[in-house]
Length: 330
Ligand code: 13P
Ligand code: SF4
Image (cartoon, rainbow, N blue to C red; front, side, top):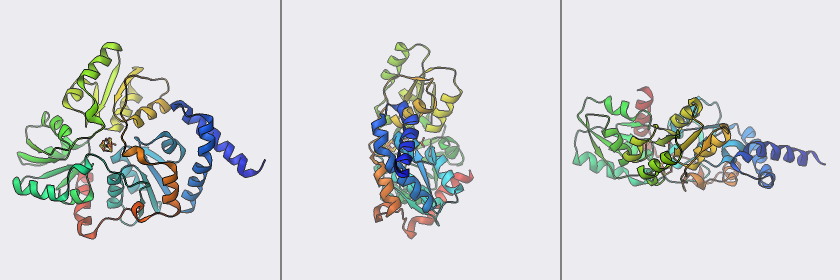
């Protein structure tokens, strides 16, 4: 047996030892191993780091990624890294965020995929809102394009949105683009929030009725939800937070039966990293996050197309960067 075949077999076994937890077969791992090996070699040659959001598929999260995390954690990781190239396996706005924080690094996105929240609002929409409500500060959730960030005073994540809103002395704040998150925040602040009509197509699908039905069916279940879910869901779960908040809860709780009202990638992470936990209910798939395949990562590393290289026009770069930096400082 040649060395190359032995190497592939070892890689297939490594993949199967992790991926079987999310029902991948040994045959699938045999097929994936040449790809993951090529990606790992190219990664070294090009001094690249691969970052993966927790909503990616397990072959990406456990086959090739150096770091798996939430949007804020990955942005910080990109800043800390000494790699020349960052391959960001996630939706496009997260690649833009990494580029804004790392102007001198090459940032690659395997697939230029959108996000229903980021696509719900344009820079012109923000300009119009500012005209309609003059003088009100604009807080934008990170799930927005660099152009929208450039028109906003400050960015925020699901974890720090309330702190960011409260940091302004003003009584009225424009909060964009997530209407459901905005309504959830409105309950926690005395400031009046002026909201936009964006929603996450993944999280808006969960309902209070489904959460209540799961609670009835599984006594003792702990239910976790992303703060992009509706108020009915957020108010009836045991924890509402970012993807990382949910993982931290899973790590710390004694409860063995859990429901995660979020994207299926996070349930895959729990099944893999906490196999003793029993996940009930159904998760929801994000078509944008799931548009990335291993072959896209390989092509980005080998010979990136124009589409795969994140570049941000000079005219908006500095203002968009400042909106993120202000959040980081806060
Ligand atoms: P996190 O910021 O929690 O990673 O969430 C990003 C996202 O797209 C949720 O839908
Ligand atoms: Fe956007 Fe929702 Fe997908 Fe997150 S899960 S990337 S918010 S569409």
